[in-house]
Length: 158
Image (cartoon, rainbow, N blue to C red; front, side, top):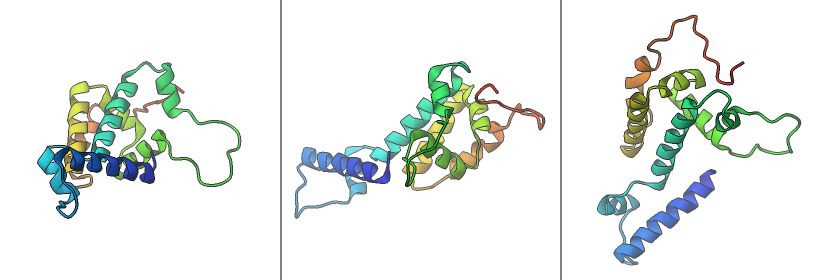
């Protein structure tokens, strides 16, 4: 999902909430006040949380499962000119980079559902409070629990 798609979706979400509450111009409130008043989350937070929950499910699947293969698949051949399309995989990789994590550590972490749920909740809480990555560092030591320096985690079963 591109930034413009997310912006349009967010606009639709807040406009719909304003219509439900009958808030029209000149009586205006900020989007943050609107979300607080309606006890709603921003649409980008909802999408992020659901994406990471889905990633956890995919990571717990068997190595040869089609969804797991599709998540890590790289097409062969040449691509078209121009900027590559924004994909779910690229979005997740960008967020992983911001978290300073790798696919291997996330895969190991996702095997324990309770820890994965805590991880997703921490991501959600950090996003909701306007922080970027702060609560996730709390889980960084847990991500590597049980991993030795010699352990190699294979995502695609190489």
